[in-house]
Structure formats: structure tokens, C-alpha cells
Amino acid sequence: MLAALAENWWAFVLRGIFAILFGIGALTFPGLTVLVIIVLFGFYCFVDGFTSLAMAFEADSKGWYVIGGLVSLAAGVITFMRPDATAIALLFVIGIWALIRGVIDIVTAVQIRKVVEGEWMLALSGVVSALFGLYVIARPGQGALAIIWIIAFFALILGFLLLGVGFKLRRLKKTAEGVVGGAAQHATGGEA
Image (cartoon, rainbow, N blue to C red; front, side, top):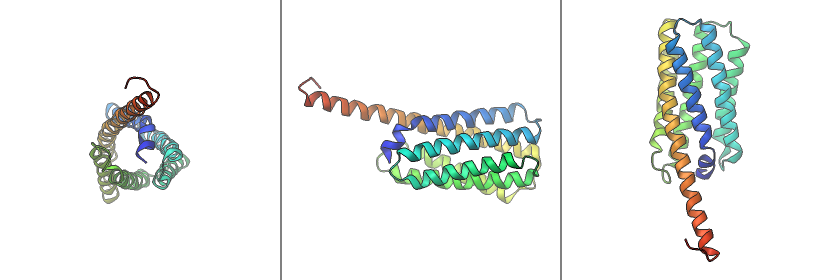
């Protein structure tokens, strides 16, 4: 599983970049209509879903990535199929998505904790997602502008945590490649 995560470090970085861009857009233009925020959220769900499914092809334990990818894609489809739905309905979709996504990230962090230092960033991103999801589900009646600000800050925090995870996995991959390359060179009679 760790090798698959390290091989797909780019997926975490991509998710992080899009989350940060989404957060910046929501903070910069809080007066945007809810429809634009819905479109941005739907687009992010598709990016998140496709990157999760791409990681599932490489992972030993495919189940969580497939579930996470399908949940994200479903949230994106629902968002684009019903953009005229009320903001409260969208908030429930966002809340449920964030809760499930958070649980999946926490489970993944627990699974890799014995072999990766810094897995706390993935666990923390899961906790942030799950708490955000619970908050949104528990308080859907708050004003749309306040919710946009909350969503923006959530996206920024999540984005930076995912970037941290991605770059940590990239370093891990490069370290593993160096060890394997050095062992191969030593086995063929070259200097290690």
C-alpha cells in the first residue's frame, strides 16, 4: 500500500492544489452566487474522485480508494445534476462527502503509520474533513455567506495538508528509488 501511495504522490499534490485554488476563489469572491460555488465544488469532487480511482489501480488495498473515489464522483454528479437545488441540500451533500472522505483519510493514515513518518498530516486532514462534515450536517441553516467562508477555510487547510502528504510521499519514493538503485549497482559489481 505504501509503495502505491508513494508512486501516486502527485494525486495528493493535485488534490491539494485544487483545494487551495477553490479556497482562494471562495475567499476572494465571497459575493459570488451560490451557483458558482456549486460548480467549483462539483469540479473539485471530480478531480478528487478521479485521482482516488487512479490510486486504486496501484494500491494493494483498493477498497478505500474505490469507495472514496466513487463517493467524490457521486457528489460531483449530484452537484452538477441539481445545481438549482437549495443551498441546504448542497450543504448536506458537502457535509456527507467531507465526513466520508475524512474517515477514509484517517483509515489510510492508520494503515501506513508504522512505515511512514509524518502520516499525521494525512490523519489530520481526515480529522479536519470529518469535523467539517459533521459541522455542516449539524448546522445547515446558517447563512450562505458564512458557509462559503467556512468552506473556503476548510479547503485551504485541507489543501495545504494534502500538499504536505504528497511531498512527503514524493521524498519517500525518491529515497526508495535511491536504495533500490544503489543495491542494483552494488549487485552488478559497480560501486554503491
